[in-house]
Amino acid sequence: MGIWITIIVAFVVFVLSLILGIYVGNKRLIASLKNRKEQLELEIQNKQKEIKELLDKAEEEAKALKQKELIEAREEIHKLREQFDLEAKQQREELKALEERLIRKEESLEKKEETIEKLKEKLESQIENAEKLEKDLETKLNVIAKMSEEEAKELVIKEAKEKYELEIAQKFKEIKDQYEDEAKKYARWVITTAIQRYASDITSELTTSTVALPTDDMKGRIIGREGRNIRTFEKLTGADLIIDDTPEIVVISSFNPLRREIAKRTLEMLVADGRIHPARIEELYEKSKKEIEEYIKEMGKEAVVRVGIKQPHNEIIKLLGRLKFRTSYGQDVLEHSIEVAQFAGMMASELGLNVELAKRAALFHDLGKAVDHEVEGSHALVGGQIARRYGEKLEVVNAIQYHHNEVDPMTPEAVLVAASDALSASRPGARKETLENYIRRIEQLEEIAKSFRYVDKAYAIQAGRELRIIVQPDKVEDAVAEKLAHDISIQIEEKVQYPGVIKVTVIREKRSVAYAS
Image (cartoon, rainbow, N blue to C red; front, top):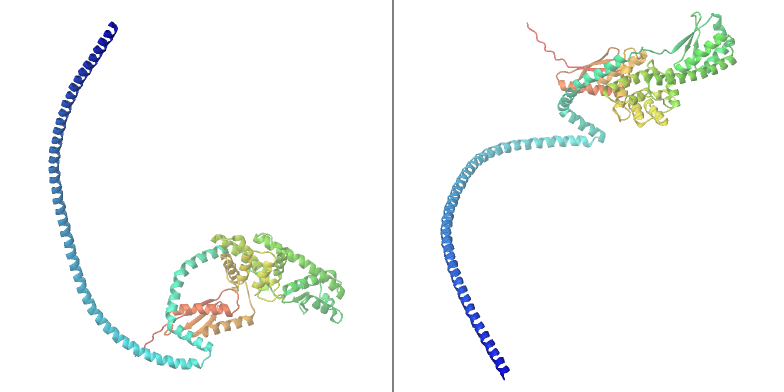
């Protein structure tokens, strides 16, 4: 019983303590909540105060911003007004300029109307002229209709030439004057330099050779019984023996230098040997031929060494040597070829061109003359074919074939070869020709000159080296005279064969004469 009371009392005490604790805790919680409430109210008041301050500040800023924007707007309006005034001013100026242009156009239109009236009158005049021209053309067409195509072509060319002759001649003179001075100066300098550096004797070949005899009795032995020795000799050698009254001399005549040289050597051997009969003549003739063949090879090799080029094919060397016994207008062709090579090499050196190519082509330029009696075609083309056959370059072949203008040049060295060939041939005394050929050439030159219109007289002077032409002064202008000289020189190049260079001079002389009495 006492235990239960204790337990109950303890429980009651516990419950009361619990209730008291809850009460005290709630009281504290209420007090805490109350304090928190007061803090929150205070904070709310502070926040409301801050918000009010911010609102006031924002209102002030809005007023200030509004004032600023108002000022900026006013400034913008002012700027726009100024821009508008400026554009309006520009438009007024443009309108004024447009108005002025319209006024000028009106004036121009009035002038154009006047011009149109004048053109209309001119056109009517031209129509009349055209109608007249049409009638003339109709007449000419009727004439042309009766012509062949070639005759009509010649008529048209003739009329065009007559109509534009002065303009063509003036243009020709203008172009010629523009380049001629400088070209002449430089060409003269190059050529004179080459000539100055190369000095060579002028050599010419004759068509006869002489052989000295120990006694005049040798002439009878050369003739032989009933002339059998001399007949055998002339038949084998192809040369003529001239045995006359000249003491102790026999003349060998032949236009072929190679045959003449073989005949001379054969006769010298026969005279030295003393035994002269047909069998001995044949024997020594064959021996002379072999010696000449060796001599030809040596001459070819010597030419290559003198010029200073790379060794060519052996057949080319042989052909070069044969040129020693070939002449052109009396000039030794091998010596001429060597001279041309030296000239071409020196001019190529001065001009900065290929010296080896120029020398090589120049030395070989007359190769065709060594075989031109055996092969058809000009010696320039034949020589080019020979060079190609024996492995020479295309540039060398072209230069050989060009030196007489039979093909177009591929290189400047080809032009140098042609110029050097003309330079060598035109040296004073380098070439000569027979009297018959000389007279024929003189006549041909004068005939060519007289075949041109407005030529009054023509004279070939200075042994045919210059052609002077006197023209009708009232029909030929100065510019036309220049063109006439050029045209005549072209005709001479195409139709006349001649050594060297021919100068063509056109003389236009106007004389005014009056008499006082």
